[in-house]
Image 1 (tube, rainbow, N blue to C red):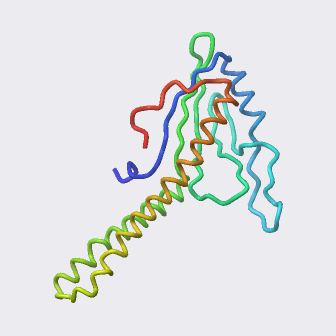
Image 2 (tube, helix red, strand yellow):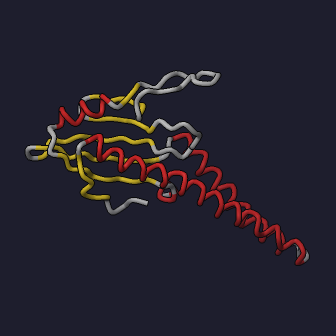
Image 3 (tube, helix red, strand yellow):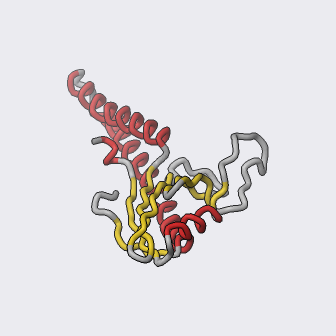
Length: 177
């Protein structure tokens, strides 16, 4: 239930290319992730995506030159459809980020409820009213940061995937955020 609060996107692409050709085009633009390292230039990649492919599936993320913890993790399946392919793509936050954001939202929501409740029962003065706003502002700011961090990157990936897959976007699924 709480995962519905987190940004995600599910779309379907249609391609005139055979599934094997689609997978080959993906493999040509994906590089295996490198292990963690210190120093500049440790994780420079020559291809636009990192990840892996197996069978008719793929799991990738964009290579970016900056930090964005809300970068979509993209997974997909290529299915033969007529003479071409249908590519079902899901974008979501990395699992560790999902857990952190959920815990953070729960904590700030608890504070947004606990502070005014505590003030009410302790008959706190009106001057402490600003304290009520702090968790509400944190909740709004945090949610906005997660949403726009994910949304800007997912839009870029949607356009790039259309070109890589030799496909056109035919359907965002109804339950996307």
